[in-house]
Image (tube, rainbow, N blue to C red):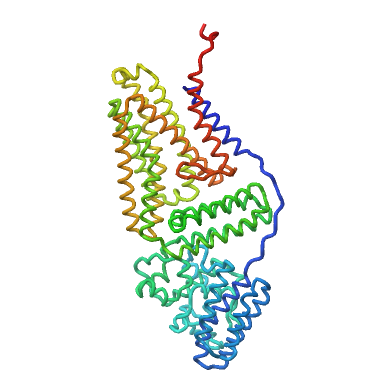
Length: 623
């Protein structure tokens, strides 16, 4: 038995080592497409027209109307400069220009500018929110150090001596009429490109993107009192693109100050914005032939951007998540093989991420969140409960109540440790670290389960054991198995406990009450499963029970082997070797030869062992 166990482990290890040290082929790079700066600038000009043209028409001031005409002329010029990609926008721009030239249709022009902005952003995949949470303190410091106070004043009232000499005057961030139209995104564009015909210059070359966003959010917060409570959870993109009135309509008048001066943390859309930026960076690195850096950027995009919100995205649109995972897989494989296709695949991946981000604008229904929560509880707890229930059934049949307590101590300890890890080290059990923990514990559990399966198999074939097990098994022998029983129970439950908590926390963003009810029903289902396996085990004959339990342990080991290898592949510890095959995550089946091959070996090992064991001994050996 020990020899067979060593052979199985050696075979599995051989497959893993072979995959890790597989040679990689180097190939040439490909140039990355130019950035969409023209379209971003076009959006900035249209946003200015959207907000200021109605005011200019109402004032009937010839100077202001002339200024609006110069802005639409700039927009048309930008579109012509962009060439063929902007041709579809020219007719709409010229229609807007004709009305602005006559100083008429203020409402229609504002509406059409807004619609054109939405079309450009959607079709060109432009980002309208920061890639990370803006830092208000950073924005405050930049407001003073970048010269903003010279015109806008220390408080933002634009009451300085320099401001009095400027025509048009600089923005007063306490002016209700002006602030009614201002959003952080519009402020960001003004900080980036400046405003033609005014003293406002652009800072695109002197300030990093995150600093420009920090400034934009800071100036839109100036007129709001400091928030004493906690802000409601709102998508960062919504905050960046909403006026104060729109936020008040969505969350209430009393929430606006908190929403403008505090953040509840990154939301699912912002996580995907981060993923997009990392994939874009990977494409540039790949075009420069910096393959390892590009591969790491794609890994970061998935582990830090997508993986933390994957469960929420799957509840909203499972097919889109499947498409997203396939695109990540293709891109990573190409990068690992230094294939220039990775550049184009990265662009496609960015487009899918954009669709996923936009799909997040609609929340999941309470019903879908309930069923998904229930599914997560049952799915994540199934393997652990079956293993624990099988062990308990065997021990009860043997009359070893003390050992049953060891099993209970194992899974209870795992839940406690998982809860502590989740509460005090949430950052350590998410993304890359969580996948590593899952992979390592899954592979450790495989070894423990194989040990338990071989232990049960040996006893199921020992006649004396079957006849007088209770009388012949000494307490010393049982004490030696206590550690193994505890370890099996602990490892089976540990990897599921904090992972389940993280999944449910993500789902609670959309419907917290549905998560609670889904969890309760899921736990009831699992308890029913444990009770059923326990009752069934007590009714089965001893030998049948041992054999069924052995099969359960081996099958679970095969499942965990696939999941463990896949988790280590996701964090880049093991390479990807995809093949055409089905994907069934529940059973740990993934279309990759590095996980499938060891699973096949492990699944066939017991059959081969039984065949060898039953083979007749040659006459020469019996003599």
